[in-house]
Image (cartoon, rainbow, N blue to C red; front, top):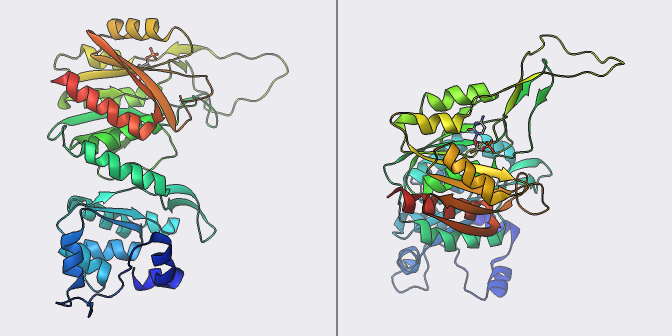
Length: 360
Ligand code: C5P
């Protein structure tokens, strides 16, 4: 425990609740060589700093070793994980994000904070991940540490598009972008270089991703097509609008007594266009269906000339567009696999593993 941690919980309480001895001092006179930090560093299989304050993150980023925790981390050779917890403004500061990136470049693993009500009363990013999430991460990370996408470049789309009707209104859909962002994170963890083309979403991009923000289907088309051939894998996880208003009114449309209608035209299919490119990447599409999932998914796999398609049910209570959970049925030309309902982050790791397997 650091000096700040002791201000919140006494070491005695921590010891009683955990059933383990608590170390607080850098130089431990009870140890034969008074080198408690070196002994602890040698002893640990993994180190997890939770909560990791902006202060400890900054210290570790700069190699400062002025207390037991920072010195232990500097002396350790085992994997180090950190789960940040701080005020949302502190989390968004460039210096904090730079320090986090530096820790990741040194090989430390970030367990991203969550969004929500904070101890200070503010709402935003920086809330410590739930203990169960931290444990899940530690267990699952062991499975994906193999860097199976090392050296490969992935292009991923995520979120909805917005098709403007007038300066204040647009047509869009319920896509949260969570699946695409989780895929980007899983691909980064597996060692890939990742570009994420995203429509408007309320998510923080994984650190280390090359983020390209777009709004309309036409913008997403241009962003993807100009980059696709320089990538090894393309995953179209965005819910791209199929139609866009023929005319975008330059002034706000005024309400009238009589009925009104909007004429729509088809957007260009980004996924199918990528699949037709001469030097195309390995192409993975998504299919969100309310019925006849397998029939539609297989039809899309063939018609759009994809290598793989991940299909999921939407419009049902569990899973799908706005949920944290999802289930997928993945099809390719010679087989299929069901990935049962789970957290989108876990599902993303499983889908990435399947892509690695099929791409070989
Ligand atoms: O045909 P459908 O829209 O159901 O296909 C869904 C898949 O196609 C998704 O992978 C989506 O990202 C992609 N798509 C696209 N461009 C469009 C429409 C869909 O890339 N204009």
